[in-house]
Length: 420
Image (cartoon, rainbow, N blue to C red; front, side, top):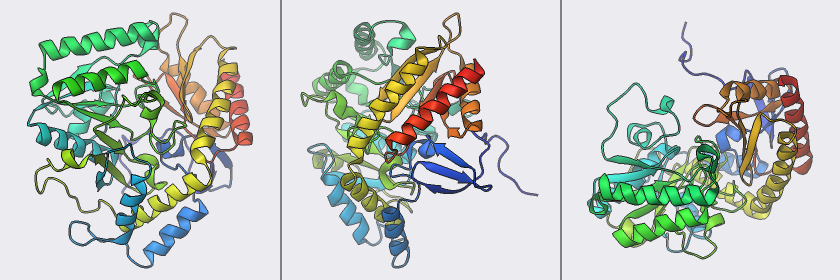
């Protein structure tokens, strides 16, 4: 008898049968508030009618047109539409299927464009599970253990995580930038460094936001040394944080700008699609034949992405993410204020994490998992993250409404109380 791999561990025991918006139903028709959104993928909710209609229409005309063989209209239209929301100057795109593939495409581009071998990533970052992407991932050993050696040329600098270091954010930022300078002086010379790759908010690393001074410091050093600044917006992009791109929270002065932006997850409401965007000057330095792939830019996925962008614009979902995120944060903070075990509520928009620590101040993954499981039993689906699994994260669809947020906070409060 065949079965799934035994190492595929489920976060919940739910056997989903159908979904509507921010809600899932199992095969017994039990309702669950889904505050996982497929790990931030179903940005417009489950089965948004406009996305469903667009995908069904496209399936009936053209399912797959391999885009290095022939071109198709959904892809060309998507390039135009993304041009309306991408940072200024990022006017060339390459499409693939997953975040990991897009990360590797960005790495390949940076190395080819600069002729340099090394890349600097930041402690706690998650960039994927394929060999190169896993080599760049430091959010947990489970993503990189057991298949060494990893890809060479990866160097890790600190991320300004005030909770981890126990410092104010300014001190953590001073430390992170000073250590980056030390790294460039002692381990990878600027002339050997192709790229900095950073998340605006650590995802699997515990939902820790960056800050304006840190990202501006990366931009300054990148400009000084001819290093490519790659901003990984796989989880933070497409409205998740209450701005269309997560790094926009830190770019009010215009100084924090990516040379390469990576997007995936919420781009197509559940269809596999990812992309990198860069300037024409930079993208033109990729070697001929270095970009491609059988399924990248699939016609149905592109049609779903176009519909997703329609819904996000027409239903003002970026604004909704900001408003519902504020509401959710306030509710989660009220719960945290009553429980010493929850030491931090943090994040941006609808990307919020609750950190659990024990009486000695150590990360408490067991407590986080217990509350996450209790919440699932009560009808609220959540996930954990962080190096010790000590953070319970809330990432509902951007269509979530005020009543659903209040309901989720109520279930969360009951779950925390029940676990004690």
